[in-house]
Length: 378
Image (cartoon, rainbow, N blue to C red):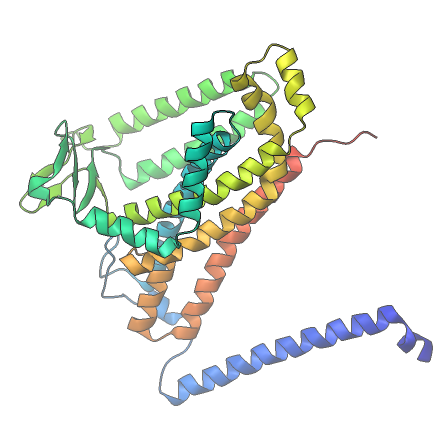
């Protein structure tokens, strides 16, 4: 027994178990104290409030929502709003960051200066100030009656950017999403039978065919194929409007995130062995082909871990939308706390929601990193 106690591994394990037990005890004690305080004030606990109607609504949602929606539905709306602006940010910031990185490593001096100036400017201005700037700019545009018109089908005003959209129902959108999932599996299964270009063209053609079928059959006979916005009173009727809150948050996140992604990508591009680039030139590749087939694929492997961290940070950065009234998950939870008083439950749901979202991003990037690893020689 004394020998076991003197064992370093035993003492280390006992210390870890004791620390974990102490941490769990503190969490349980805090929960019990919080519950006792809530009950002493005559407030209810538990998650039964999620089935109650909210009595309030939000100004922007990718699905139908109203004052008669339940708290559960409203929280789901908040998550979808966060995912909508967050995923768009990741895609657009990655593309812009790649352009900035290529400008930074270019031999063209003016392009180097422009890329470097952009990165230093947007990286050193706080994100919240950038979002507020774009929101102030967008809300000081003309009113709907004096909106900037684009061929009388799209309009830009202080209410947002109003665009024509296909007349698809919510069920049609779900079918399209399911079709995309099926195409993704088919795309992977056909990898040995067709080359990349043939698979991409086939996937685009299949998705376009599904879209046209739904557009022609999934609507009422009297409905037009395209919902075109038209001015009615002080607002536009029909079409789809990108609210200034959504647009300002998206622009701010993209421009801010691209400055960091650009530097991450530049580091990855510079890490590629010059010998591989010279080998590509010796094979007759021009600079564009070298970047496309050699430099960017090899750099992507090197920059993927840092890129994953930046993606997680950008997704968490969507919470700054609360300062301009964008109803993301954080804003919806904050409003729900004020209206229902269920602070502990809603804070727990807030943390769980962001943990799931960010863990999913990290997991996807780790899987991608494992697949892109260069296989060593046995």
